[in-house]
Image 1 (cartoon, helix red, strand yellow):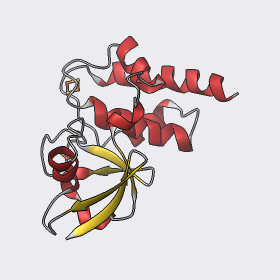
Image 2: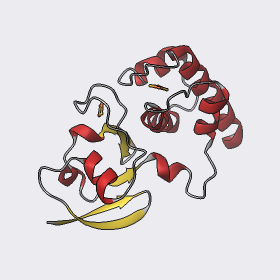
Image 3: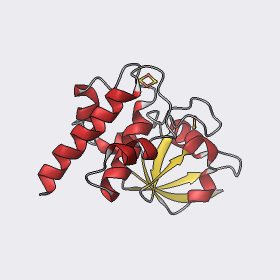
Image 4: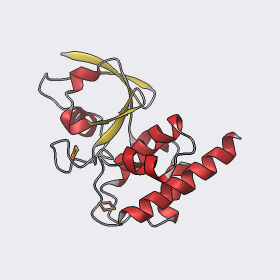
Length: 157
Ligand code: FES
Ligand code: FES
């Protein structure tokens, strides 16, 4: 049946089966393939998107459950092809290698920095514990979050 969503600020009306996951809807119907499906079991964080600002594993969420919600994907962070400060920080600190985990991580970092603009290391680690990265090691990711937080705090100061 047709259901309404707001995806990256745009209202969408989509035919969605009750069994369809949010990840499949984003990837297959909207072409938003930045939402990566890794484990498909809610265990790796690769498919994370923001639902009304909250990180959610899109592989483990039926699309109909988020009808009417504001959905943010990685594509929404760079609408005109200019990467945002968190993406920039990930690049500069070497926190991206294969990139499979990056979209989910970067969206989670956005959610964190909106709530806690200057998080300490323990807060960052706790917030990101649902994310698995097989490439960079977590030190580079921690450095990326620290850098993004510093820059974003400066902009809003
Ligand atoms: S693909 Fe969704 S949590 Fe791993
Ligand atoms: S950069 Fe490859 S899994 Fe994280």
